[in-house]
Image 1 (tube, each protein chain N blue to C red):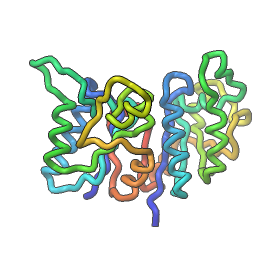
Image 2 (spheres, chains in turn yellow, purple):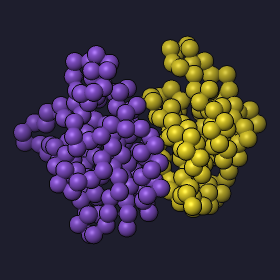
Image 3 (tube, rainbow over the protein chains, first blue to last red):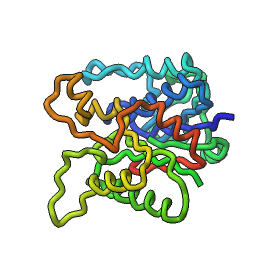
Length: 120
Length: 130
């Protein structure tokens, strides 16, 4: 049986290539039909903000990559409730769904459930 | 135990040195390294054009020597490398660039090799992350 991998994305979308490079890991694994989960943690939750204006920063929009996750079979998507609250973000108004918003103790259990974990 | 090791930081970062020390210790203790995967700024740790001052530790050279002498499977992510100007001869020709800074024992390949390493290893150990 294939080993499961949890990808933890902790970087803001426009602070460098990290957000994109974390998504690339998920999309590449999805293409191989591997059991993957993705957790948005710390500044990583900022990737989930709707109505981002990438053009104003002369950057390429990440939304398409986020939307592609489901198409690539990466459906286990999680966000940290504490990280959202710290940044004044409402769990109801995010640009990815379905998204599971988890409390800190649930995150510990989530990490425990996966065979391997990679944090970007 | 079988380890896959991912590195995200350049040669001048302490985590590149720590990853190397971990890898050396793992082999010395009888463990196996099924894959090294250099991602993000970690591609610079594999660069052959880094010039280290004479009185400092030449980390890219140490990595090269370690990979060669232990015949390890050492992959540099091609997408991350191209974005950062770290090319091998073939890619330099393909994109008409004047410099190549990746050579054997390193191989440029895709993210599939990271997933392959994850599947083959008992543990994935990452260095240089947030």
